Image 1 (spheres, helix red, strand yellow):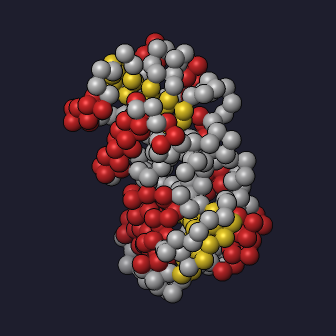
Image 2: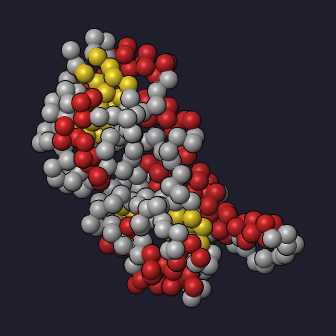
Amino acid sequence: MKKIVVTIPVEDRHKEYFEKIGDGSAFVYTSPSAVTGEDIRDAEIIIGNVEPGLLKEAENLKWIQLNSAGSDNYCIPGVLKPGVILTNATGAYGLAISEYMVGMSFLLQNKFYRYCRNQADHQWKDEGDVTSVWGSATLVVGLGDIGGEYAKRMKALGSYTIGVRRTPGEKPEYLDEIYTTDSLDELLPRADFVALSLPNSPSTYHIMDERRLGLMKPGAYLLNVGRGSAIDGDALCRALKEGHLGGCGVDVTDPEPLPGDHPLWDAPRMVITPHISGQYHLKETFERIVRIAGENLEKFLDGDADGMRNLVDFGTGYRKR
């Protein structure tokens, strides 16, 4: 009898769904904060994130299905034993996070953040000129589910969309142009919006450093929903203070949580949210995670590991397909 530990906050209907697929398996329902080494010691399957350091206790683990799209903390050598299958939740977050990104784009270009501050200060004040998504150019760096969904929405709103991905691939309909990362320097001066949706890896660390921030079009907007380490925070502060960027909106920072005395809090035209664009704030996000986990559970139990969704490449931290 296989033991399956589930750490995501399932309701009874979700339990029935999993237990129908895994008929005959022993299910243990817990949470990331409550799960113990004893809970997972003899588990063959874990559905949901657990503290990576705890996984050394999982002596019989064969597969872990993450409830996050990011999987870098689980790809560190020694976290998982050789042969353990790792799948992530790519495909669950594109809806919520892409809508967050569109909202952030509107907020920055229409200076809504200034009007919110004026309202708090009881000031009736015109903040001047704005820009439009229509007729703009949007550069999306990272074309997974999240980046792709944002590009679709921006194109529908009238923006010219350019995509950057790690490896060559066919151009989807929602992009006007597609390139690999080695073309980033030539593309940055063309973009009115630069959106990052990248995992944490050596190749993405400070991909937007001082030099590349300087290459951005004056007045352009920068968004980051992947990992905070993709942007050099000190260089970003300087670019904003010098007036080079029209604004920046981030849902991720480095470090995270961002310390209260960090200069980014007070940088002009900076909007920060505390890593909330995904999570389960949109209920459909959670439903998608459950469906991904259920489909993969069925594949795994049928012995079709190669057919599972979102298999992660430990060397890159990206999903294989």
